[in-house]
Image (cartoon, rainbow, N blue to C red; front, side, top):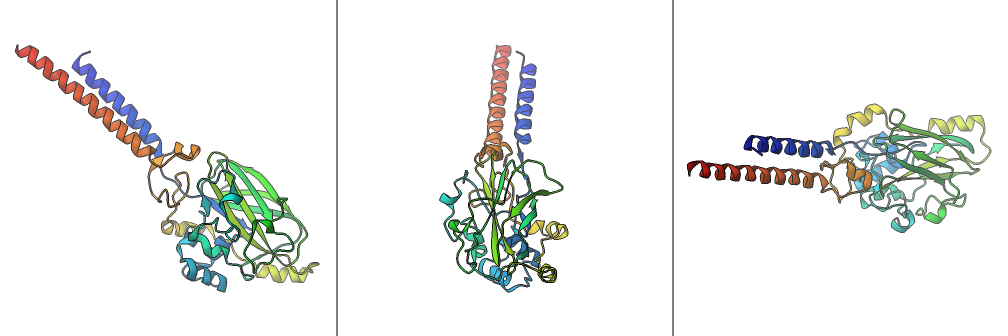
Length: 307
């Protein structure tokens, strides 16, 4: 092969390798939370991280700062693979056992609660990075005491909703229905979103107010007037720059800091964060090796020519 053809091969191989590497590297958004009935983190975020209005949300900021609220769509565990109870201790369900979100576990009866009645309920999940998986929503038993830490045994074994999720959404939302059983007083919905394309899972706690049983129309209207708001799309867009969450397989957990560039396929297989840099390093090594070979051949041919 001539030097010219060899050099062309170097260019073709190097360009192809680098194009494959670049195609597999990227960054994106985060993941999501339940916005109807609104989750704890979404309700406090909607109040405004810098100016919370309810006492509980003020206490959330006092305990954990504002960043967990700006990162409302990242209550996750990177490698749970369905073993939720084994990895999340009693009393830490709403935070998924993460210290960053520990304020979400506060055992209080004054969390912003959505007024509901038994029967059909329409769920809305604001998704900022759709994933293939399954969302399962559980409700607390009638005996649950909201002033005590939430335990796994407080949840009814029969879910009120269970649906598959896909990598596409309805304008940024998953929408589906479930059925609430008869309850009275304060209750809680616990959402588990287990990805099937990764061991990663997400969690969400939504507080409910069933009232005192048979609720009149006037009482329902009064409760509805006190219903917590979900964050608006304008608020979400305005605060994107304040979020530390990046989607590279496992959100913004400590093992993979936000903003790190990794191969896109690492999210699908739960791979490590070093894939992207390794690809680039491999491309550079191949380029250097081929370039060295070309230079050596040039030197040999020059010596022959001079001889």
